[in-house]
Image: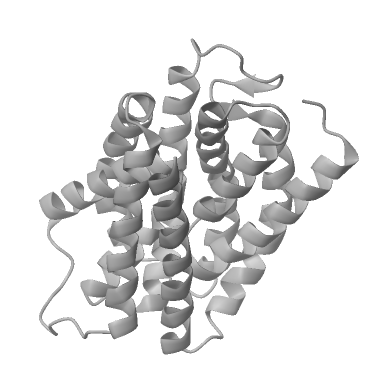
Length: 271
């Protein structure tokens, strides 16, 4: 596929939008990118199954750059909980590699989509209800965070998202303030993305009929355009996150989760 002007415009707009979303909500923008990249690739002759997998891998690769950009903005507000990052990151790396290097190429996308849609719906409902966690509840110890990180990394590897859809609700459930949870989730996007991208690149080496410019399952032309544009708007989203009231930010996050869940359920039930 050649990078004709229309394709560049489509990818650039996608990068600008998802970059802002990543900075605002710490979700990495992955679950917004995947359906759009799938449509773009399918319209240009890539088979549906391969288009979905390449969209997931390419989306995850862009999070490497988005994460760095948004974390710098969040760090200016001192919002990143680096103590949590250090405890969750090892499990995240292990879970991500297992998901992207092995299970990703074996499971049917329809099953993953249905499970993901149900899980995200539950998370969104919890945030909308805004049930207050027990005041005494805190983040689990090192072992518990290692397991939680593995779960976050594993699911992220299967759906191409930066993990914010799990890590933000999990941290707020453990009495981490929403702004800190969003900022910390953005920081966790980096190890999630690096580990998963390694898995996608290796597992896609034997795949046939990859489009030109592919490195394993990663479509490099799209990665270049989206990443360049997303790093421009990610800091803008991060700054906006610190100006929006907590309750409003929670409702925005939950609304987006519902939309993503509906899409994934539709995708899983109709494929």
